[in-house]
View 1: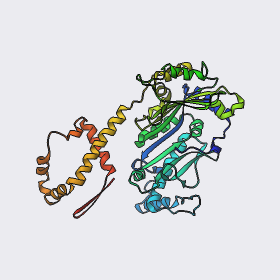
View 2: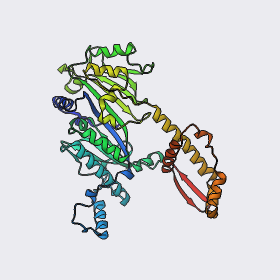
View 3: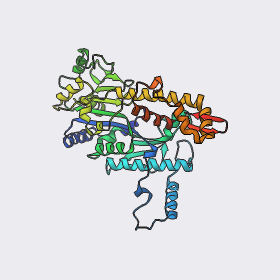
View 4: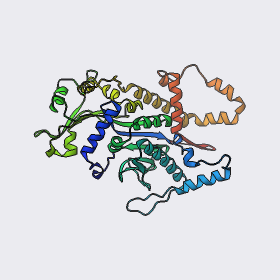
Length: 413
């Protein structure tokens, strides 16, 4: 996981606290979104009309002028400066993707507020994305938008079809009022997927009962979910009671809570700050993370477990607990896996025969389909609904690239 540099974390702790308190008062919710990552498919990340064609008099744009304008915009995307190397020139395709990513970055900055802007040049990417546009605040990177894959491996090539947004804690903390709702609307309109969201509950005067009460809760089974005890881990100086972190759950499960001494992190141990934070970190490995987690973070915080709901009670806040279950994600993964196996078998085993019938007897296609059609679906798919299979087939076809030549078919995933 790519994190901001130490320099970007050197912020005035009091300023952060003031900002968090102001947000709590404005939103009437004690839960703060502290980190956000989401991915949108490239086909839905189109340059805005205003970016491509600024306001003109009616009928002023001709086909020729529109084409010239688009070509000029593509050419205007700056080359990428990579550390230790001279300027790397974009291909025409890469430039078009860079423009899409730039337009999305501008939209995200506008949602965050006037303090945020796009860096003046493209930079080397993170997390297997080849390039990134940096989101800046006070001349410090507080997020980035990645595009194009860093290698030609089949797994990473899928990233060529997506653009990824990563907003650090600084961006989430200092975003203007209403930024969460605007980003949630953006994700919905673009058909995006949230891949990580951190929901933080701050106790500026300390957790009632003290930090050690969290460990006692865990030992008593209060943190159990559906009768199962989550994993735990402890970091920091537990002997002297400084800079401690208590982890509940795991990253592998896609739901982990870190209870830590936030005041020690921001002000140093010598300040003896009582500030504690309970930070719930959701990942999309086993779950579909809804955009409403940005609109109603307290509800989704409280929905993580009865213990999380009890922490909201300690913060004197009541919520409508909204759990994010694994079932939907596992069901979606299962149907897509089975449809993918079926498509792979068809392409590798039966594609030549199917192509022969369809190419050489086009007038008989209807009769051929009637002959091979049955009322039953393959056994692998019988436990899924018609709509689930239809959606999965569309996504499976998007992942397969079929390049056919006479007498030969090449399938790449």
